[in-house]
Length: 303
Image 1: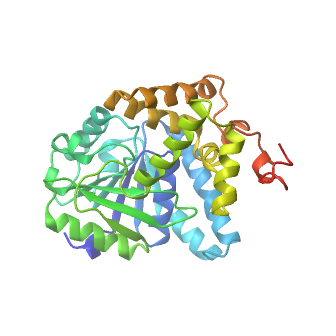
Image 2 (image 1 turned 90 degrees about the horizontal axis):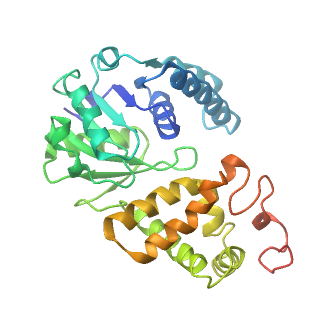
């Protein structure tokens, strides 16, 4: 398949990333189907997509007419058979479980046309972990998004069995969709940006978990030296402490690293209290108006 042949997209999973990806592709003229297991998930997804489109109009990223046309190109369904009809490319964003992802892809392998390219938006897993389970490993590749509300960077990561044709088609498609494509020559956990970000956040977690410095002082150090508007703990509040905990816990189990286990335990105490960041109004800081946004924070006057 050539990149220009990719016109009809299936988004598996109507969560945070699935919604963003669906709207972006629709804005660029693709017909998009969002599949999820419950109608209430899809109803919520469409409502949030409407809101996102309104925000894009307000920011003058698209016109009201473009927003309306994009929303009109997005359909939803809870029926796998309906979702798979005449699909050119699948973008999967289900929970980070290789067995689950393999089962989902296996189901859609039996339903999608033979030409359909399968892509995964996994953040922590390697595509080779479940490539065979997809039923079409040659047409399977990672196409990983970050936050499409703020950037258009995507990582393209083949596994050893990905066909060259698939690699070229997905890269060409990404460019056609106005995306900044970052190509990986081989599989590597965390891709490019996430690998750097994980090391950055893990170092901050280690400093706090070992009592070397306070959360506020760690952020003040980063913000003060680098002249940045946010530090590692403010950033984890934005990402979601629950997400940071899942990633840290995953790698602690994978590697058996005692310090990573200590970091995961440090984060879990916030998760157990339901204090996971901006989305709950409290995490390492209180929201709105977190301490690190207050005048004098870096100088220590706001602490």
